[in-house]
Length: 427
Image (cartoon, rainbow, N blue to C red; front, top):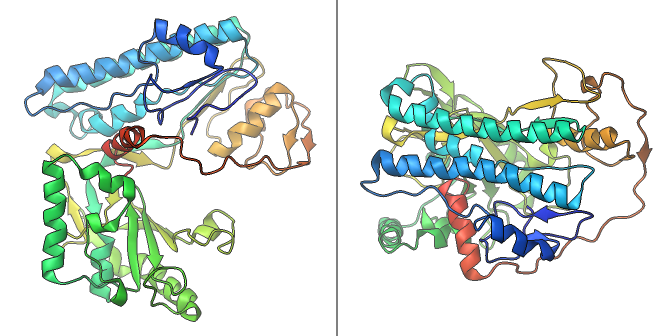
């Protein structure tokens, strides 16, 4: 979330959501010309390219682009670090995520022998990422710096897609419009696919892309979906056609939470094993320790699918889950990521339990700076050979939030939306 770049005490090159090299992607702006002179494509705007007959040639080109991005990131980090100086330095290798989304089935041990040529290509791409990380490790060593390597999530296979709106329909919570309206929804979607307009729906987030819902008869609906399902009750006074009385809100939500975690949501996977479709059905205010009064438009439930599954809004066929054939298997996220630390002041410790929110206070501790008392996370004292003296400070004020001004043109917004949709972040 670094576009547009803000003023910092140092330098900042904005990341994945940057429209392209023609945008103002760097602070201070005076660095822009020097960066573009060395790296004409510093913002990694290219997504995974597809052609009907691209074959291994196009597959290799996509991986070559990713490999180049890793070395470019390391080289740009050295250049800007040396030019501007730094006390703390962070670089994101974004496309390690893209590799796994697009090529997981070639490195998954269950299927890697099906296409050994592509498996080897993907392994080589990861080797290039290792080389780039190695270069940054050398740069850290040259500067006597401690290094933390962190991922915000893990990765695994995407093998099936759950249709919770089908379950809501079966259970009597969701009603669809007439058959003709439903057919019209699908026809419009197909026409937009043929004319290249499908991403317009993703940007607007309209459920009309997938379902002709009769909201006058619907009490609950999955309005947004992907790596989780966002369920909303059709609440009076909040939704335009709300029919759920506020006095019934808690009971209905508890009822749905129990159903999504109960026997109604058990199925058999392709190996014959009985599984639960969802690993959790969270109430957001409990998950995030916040107030529904302060955040009234939070989902009412967040449905977390089991590993290897994703959630869709549409209803196609009569099965609550559609398992994917090998040809359509891709990668998706896992909640467990990685954390590693090395360098001055660190010690060897295995099996520790860290959360991503722990990184910020730990970095402040490494720098010998006070930690705000209201900061999420904890200092990972396990990584230190000698625990530093920790100081805490009370926040004296709240920085003004940057307001909801439009920072993208329509064309730029479409470019960023296309990238998100291509990776499955937008259905």
